[in-house]
Image (cartoon, rainbow, N blue to C red; front, side, top):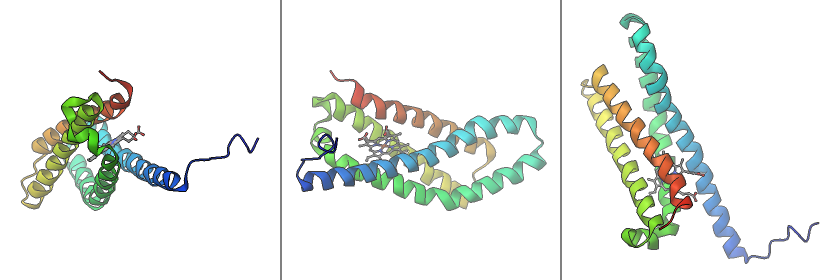
Length: 163
Ligand code: HEM
């Protein structure tokens, strides 16, 4: 039985695999937190706003916003840091994105992720200036939500399709 599970790959290959696996796990966990927060904001909070008076929903939004400001920078650091670490393995495919389907889909995924980062910076800046009014915040959340759907679909398609 133990012979079946004996791993004969060189130790340098195994170390690289473990390193990649660690980044992959961190990426998935951070994506789980980030995507979860955005889905909650859009699918739950958006609908709660319609059913609760402003005097109740405003303090809830403020408390959620304050918590997000504490949590998001670390989540994004982990998400983007691990993403860049993994993308290094695919640098050859990314250097010629129109020459291979995987590189193109990964480049699109990264472009969407960079746009999400731009949304985050804009929201933080507006919040600091006191200009992040409810309507604008809703638009930003819906836009990030749509980006997120694209990122997740691309993350799966890039390994599943080729042309
Ligand atoms: C909003 C930001 C991001 C989100 C929500 C996100 C989400 C995801 C998800 C859900 C997966 C699939 C993981 C799996 O199926 O196990 C994935 C894979 C991947 N992501 Fe991201 N990602 C983001 C940003 C980035 C960035 C900035 C990069 C690189 C610069 C990146 C590089 C990768 C790579 C290379 C994979 C493939 C991992 C593999 O299956 O081996 N991601 N991402």
